Image 1 (cartoon, rainbow, N blue to C red):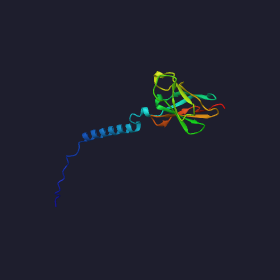
Image 2: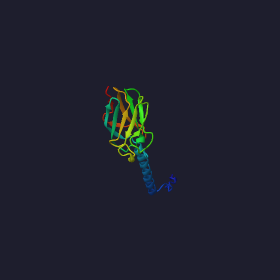
Image 3: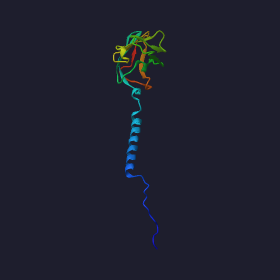
Image 4: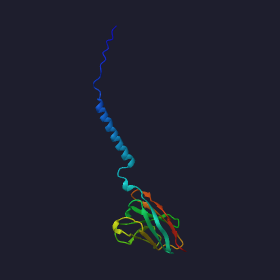
Length: 172
């Protein structure tokens, strides 16, 4: 008996050239998607900076000064809040109420001890950023009390890692 099966070659498949072009296109698209996932899309301004304190010290029984050092990226004063623990109690908050070139500049200190005031001095107020040497003077503090400081970066919703002494105790 003779084999009557008719085996035909299929001609309706994708040509090798088109298949190669499709594979390259898919690879490029996947590489772009992976890059955006790993690097983040426009997240450069939201990354948390690092910084340091030049000095954090009591200047007398009722006053102290905290002096900023260098930050790893530009830090706008409106982008940070400073949490202050007074005598180890719950943190109070110092923040900039508006962007101003006036210096010294009165800060908003929510939960401050009665009569306490915070004032910011910017060596380059027109620059619009916190720079090395800028400082905050705290007055009306309580004698014999420990004050500790933590910088919070609003844009990244994270605490800034600050190097250096972050607290002082006013003399009794």
